Length: 130
Ligand code: SF4
Image 1 (cartoon, rainbow, N blue to C red):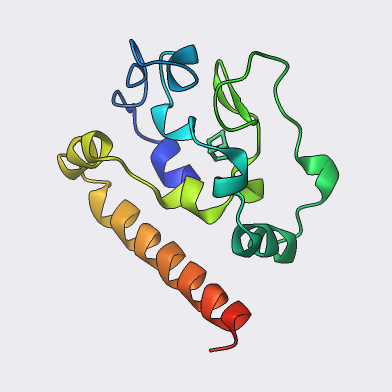
Image 2 (image 1 turned 90 degrees about the horizontal axis):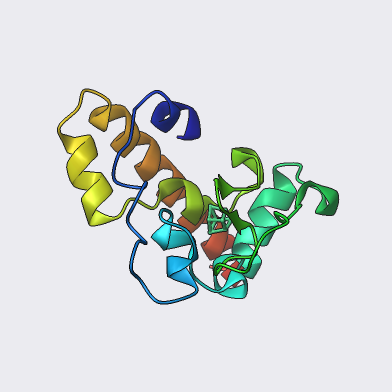
């Protein structure tokens, strides 16, 4: 998903947090990363990245002011895509969704997002004992 999005010159994420109150408004972009770290890194998300091979030392926060999620810095997320929670990779706000829908990458991005969502749901069911 990260590779697919990296091929696109995305505009939506550059200024979406401008004029918002803190912590979201700390940096111009990345409003969706202004949430609470503990809410984003749920037990299921932590289990998923651990199963994927992420180690605690892979989680290095940026040396910058607090801006919501502890890994949100002035230039974006300080984590490698494979070390991020699934929600960080598949979440597309309405503005970004609209932007992507207009391009040829939409089919790939939506298919990968659905696969991530299904995998997340399967892991949650497993952890719930369903
Ligand atoms: S881990 Fe990275 S992508 Fe996810 S909310 Fe935090 S800063 Fe944003």
